[in-house]
Image (cartoon, rainbow, N blue to C red; front, side, top):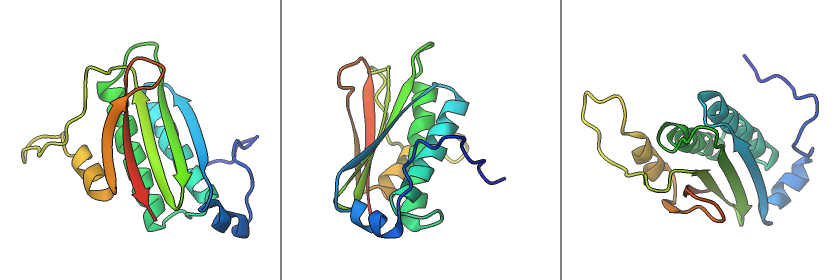
Length: 156
């Protein structure tokens, strides 16, 4: 089912020529989302919409790569970084043709580790996907709040 239109869009309407020019300036998109599966799904969908607004259309390799990375990092934030009553945060930064994805949560003591999951395990492969798709990725302490930020950089 295609996404339903928003009554009031938080995304500015951008022409095709403006989209090409956006790739040469610094632009950011920030979203606080509930640490629930619904919140993670919202983060992925709005990141997808923002990438389209920035000039990477739905279905393009950069768009789909970024959407997968956002999905993985958002799900990890709610699965392993959740503190009841605390939100997670998604931040996309576009600069010089590359997008930096940051997902922050409030559990700074639980740092993610990319590991090779066994053949029968249901979990444990997501960060390997992020590592293989992103130019680089890592973690940093969350600025101005308790917790951590997991980030990845995707180039066009």
